[in-house]
Length: 246
Ligand SMILES: [Zn+2]
Image 1 (cartoon, rainbow, N blue to C red):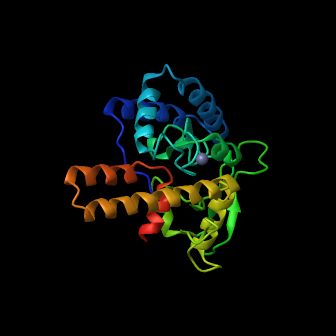
Image 2: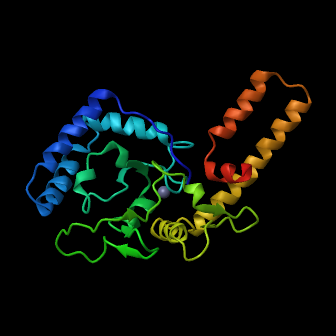
Image 3: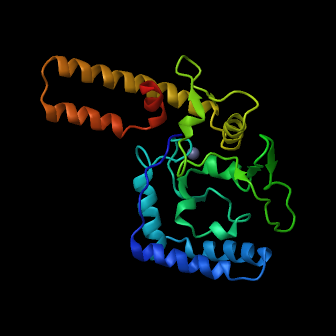
């Protein structure tokens, strides 16, 4: 998982989202806002809706490879995911900044799991599980690493030496460690299929790099070298390449 590029929405779509958000925010209490957020999002997030067509277009250009998921980088992304769940944070339901294109295997289990950290300690407070009635989550910094606003690789290390597992980069007992662990667990970013895919991506990147070096040494044209560079930039699992560079 790497930081996603900051792609702006066309102005008309931005305005429309802001006006829909204001409609939810104007409601009297949290439970009513949650109900409206869920209902209105379902109603409007359709293929025919012009604003969501723009949202999907912008989210697509944010994806790596062939429209790969913003979390796992592996499966096709076709679900408009709320980084902060709309069932807990209705004030973020139509926030462009809160959207990401995700795949079913990442988005499904994540569902409404969400934890926050208090200022003082690295202890997580799960705010999204076991809720009966909609309840306003306590204040605090989200535990989930947000690839739209943060650099996930500042929190994570990818083992390129054989396991292709992610681990936290910070010291155990710190807030950054807790956030990395929580994110890996909620999104299941170390599921076996992903480690296999990352291992394959690693071999492919190495082969492309080796070809680039050979071509350069043989005096290939700038255009030919550029094509090889672009092939690397458009490949799936950009985190593997990111970690190879580090
Ligand atoms: Zn995914």
